Length: 184
Image 1 (tube, rainbow, N blue to C red):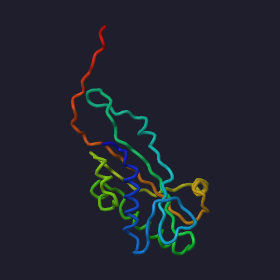
Image 2 (image 1 turned 180 degrees about the vertical axis):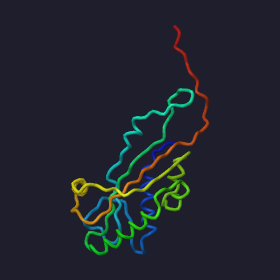
Image 3 (image 1 turned 180 degrees about the horizontal axis):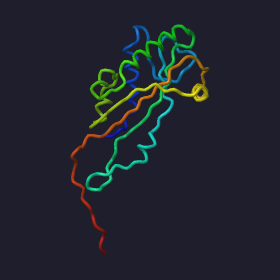
Image 4 (image 1 turned 120 degrees about the vertical axis):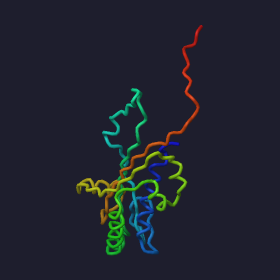
């Protein structure tokens, strides 16, 4: 299997982590922040990036062959509360910060209970999966640019990053047959 589901798995896990901390009646939705959010948190993925070092560094095996390296990805999220009630939004953001601050590193086993769609996590077929959560301290101008790109007025929000590293499990397949040139 491949890392095709990695971003969806990370977003589902982040949503699950926040949802587990919320009181009943409050929900966490994956969406762009908008003015009509009513009673819960909105989790918006606004940037996907690979660390520059991960893109530039080939991994060479002991036999000199180039190996497939782990997939490293940074996912940046904006977490917002309801637009109409600032105090409720602030309380929900406080709950989110508490939940995000309790655990900084996850592996596959600790992600499993957070998933609403556990089959996505299983489809990763991960040899290794390491996930770190970090506060994202963006300059004010960049925060304003994110809000503007979302088409929403700036209000209270939390910027958070998931740093995920995934490596595929070695799967024995049919032997590779090298073919020579065609003789004529």
